[in-house]
Image (cartoon, rainbow, N blue to C red; front, side, top):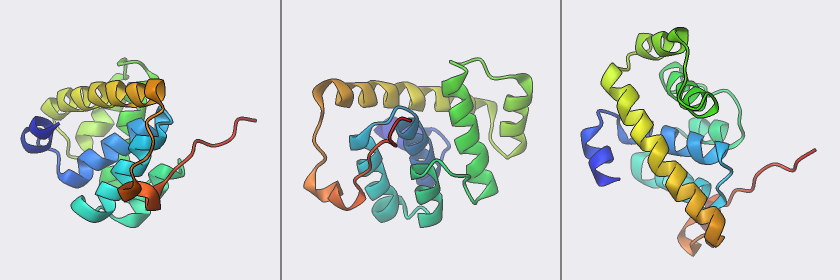
Length: 138
């Protein structure tokens, strides 16, 4: 993860948007708490952005919204975005290289999220203030 944080061309806030968006999709209680805490305390991501992702609401920052939307698209399409999806992502200022870095970030979060599901990883006390639970199924 350190290589991604230092070599991807994504800012710390942008990486937190990716990690939170993927963790929200995969409903990982541990990663949602941990990345929310890190976004709040380390990267200093805007609280309204973090809370929007946590609540599955529209992200209020256009640039970060494009990143969250493309992350969701990559996950839900299983890596088959449309040309329009890629064009919207790059029109928001992201690069083709960042498409590849995004794929790497999603792969890393998938492994992490699924591992936490299998082992029911308890949330560390440090992250307890940002505990998150998936919404109830209808």
